Image 1 (cartoon, rainbow, N blue to C red):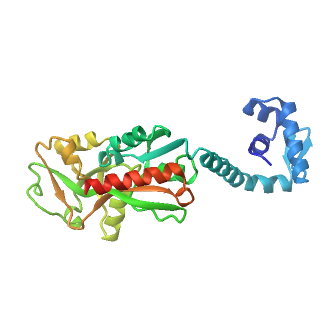
Image 2: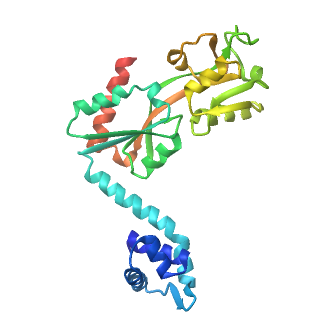
Image 3: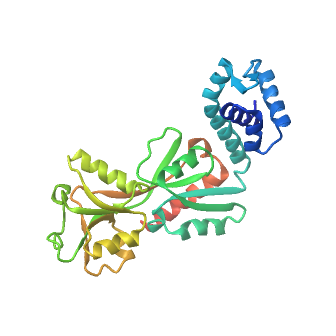
Length: 294
C-alpha cells in the first residue's frame, strides 16, 4: 500500500465517481481505475460496487476510508523521518515561534550556519502550535517554542526568557505603580496578542485560575499596534518585557505582575534525532552561546 493509491481511493470515495475523482487528481480515469483495482487486489477486498449511478462504497470501503487519514499521516511521517535521517549531515531546518526572535537574535542562528557551511541551514517563523506540529511531523529538525512543552517524543531546554508586564499609559490611575496583581486589573480594558501567540493562552488561563474574566477589548498580531493602542489610551497592554527596548515608551510604563508572569523560549528537538549530526552540533553551539550570555 502506498500514499498515492490511498489518495486515489479517498478521492473516489468522496466523489463517488471515477471521472470526477480523476479530474480532481489530474489523472486519466483509466489510470485511476487501475490504481483502485491494484489496491483492492493488495487488500484482497472489494472497496466499491460499480453501478450505473457511480462508485458505491462497500462495507470494506467505508472501513478503509475511516482509517485512511490516519494511515496517510503515519506513512507521511515515516517518509519524512527517513528523509530526515538521510539528510542529517546535509541540512538543518529550524522553526521559530512568532516572537521568539525578539529574545533569541536571528544572528545566533545565522552564525551557526556560517560556522558549519557543510549544513544547508533553513529557518522560518510559524505560530507556536505549528512549530510543534512540524517538529513532530519531521518537517523541521529543531524548533524554538514559547512556553513549556510536555511531549514524550520531544526533548526541550530553556534558552531565553523575560517577564510579562502590564503597559500602562500616562494619566491612568495605575500609571505610577511599581507592581500589580491580576485582581487589580479586573475590569480594565486590556490589549493583548491574539490566539496565535502562546501569551494569550497563558494569560487567560492564569486569569481563570484566579477567578478573573479579563476584559480584552483588542487582540492583534502586531506588537507595534499593541504599543500604539496603549499609548493612545485605548487600553492597557499585556506584553513581554522586551517591548520596553523595542519602543520609545513615551508616556507608557511597563509594570511587572506580582504573580511573576514569564515569557519563556525553549529549544526543542525529537528525542530520536538527538544523535543526528545536525542536532548534536546545533545543540552544542546553542549551549555554548547561552552559557556565554549568562
